[in-house]
Image (cartoon, rainbow, N blue to C red):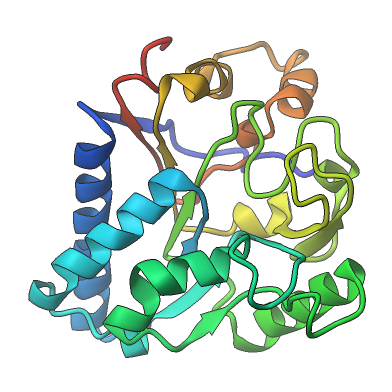
Length: 253
């Protein structure tokens, strides 16, 4: 199993009153980071996630984008995981993000795993996405946004699932997800941990215990078991890890 970098920095925790304030703060910070990178002549690579709070963040990005100065046509966007369903399915993280902000801001350098309309199996989808990452990726994400499941999963790496042990590739095919749809493609720990800045964006009291477990200090001997129970423990940014939480999600730390 791939674990966090040995010398990874301690996580930062930022708590906001509610989901709306959280979404606005995250969107504003992302726009600032991307604008600064572009002003420095860089091509930002940003990892996106799905879910309810991600949708709120995406809509806030669209609202704030006109005043940000960001050229979204020059931002390279990726997804930490994707559902293996038909191309037009509302379950696709890509489709949710397109509806919320990608089309509105003019983002077109967008990459994710192929749908079941495009390839025959989730294994083919994972292999194709891996090829795209190798061919068009920068080797790292400048910012990687991630959610957190109530069970402690991150991307589509679920507690106790074989995907936790994937190595030697940036993607893994996931079968039997405990959260539907069952077939997915996920970035591996190996790929997730190449991000410079990892942002966990978590809202709601249903996630509070998972937040507590993800941030809990345990002994080195207990860490492998803790990681299998709460896979989010296995992702840390090379330069920083920030937990953006609302008050309900932070209520047990």
